[in-house]
Length: 145
Image (cartoon, rainbow, N blue to C red; front, side):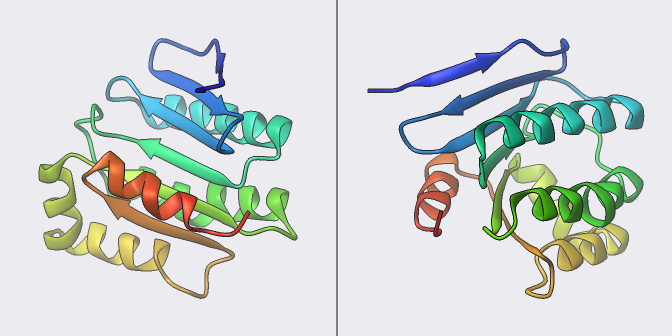
């Protein structure tokens, strides 16, 4: 049975928590400004704390804008703080990307550096990128709680 708890959010973000599998899903519904990104991810963080969620599926397939500034904020500010919230457990994040965005992460030098930093084993969290939701969920569900 799918036991999803939906949380009302702004027009750019849909949040749900699946109690049956312990996955917090954040689906970005459109491109956002840096201020909206920061506000939205603070909602994700609050929702994560409320449910003690250590497994996040972040779906950014509908966000067409991709830049190193906003991605850098997520990697350097948001995720380390969220990982600290989750301690002593490890925060696991599966980023679900459109194929064109995934290609940009691998070819744009600024985005490549940001992605490498995000996926570094030295981070206090574990992050992987995916273009298929099934594979993202499979990875998340294979990580320790």
